[in-house]
Image (cartoon, rainbow, N blue to C red; front, side):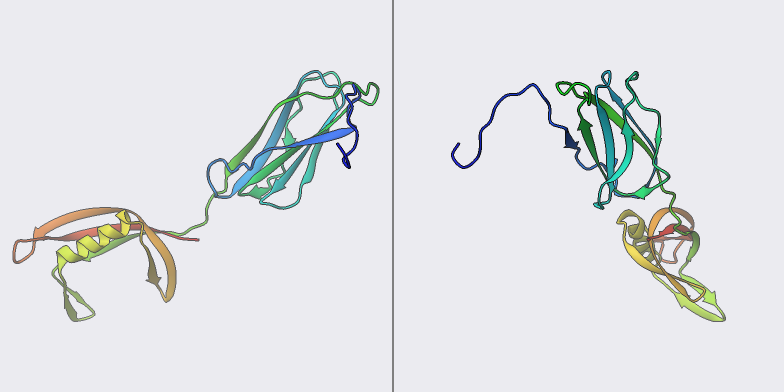
Length: 202
């Protein structure tokens, strides 16, 4: 082709080439802690280098594999690195002794575990009664409306602000337990104890 060059078939392989794998997230965006990785290949001719990029950072060389008499690596530690997403690249280097043969990479695996969250969790007993007295002041409320609002917080996954001891937290409802005790004066709703479980959003 004019202006491009001349191409020929040659049994000699390039010195090296690389393959890049699609991004891995283990189907969740939460942080993971990398434990180790392992690779496998056909009887090795040449060398295989494994590179990893965490969360769109630059690639880092994890290991260089050139065990001639094996078909798999040992577990290569990932040193507990935390990441959300991971990209892998495999660099294949031909045999130095015979330029017509190179490595055949078959598969690899990586092991990671979820990072334990540090979010605070509250179990809040809420007295849902028609009339309640706090510090000598009597308050009245619509028990049915309060019940509907509290249930909606959990079922709708609504974020709301929890204030406790002068501090404010962004939380969402995780679960609840409704314990009705007696009917309201008009007999149209129940009064009782509503236990709300909520967790901080970080």
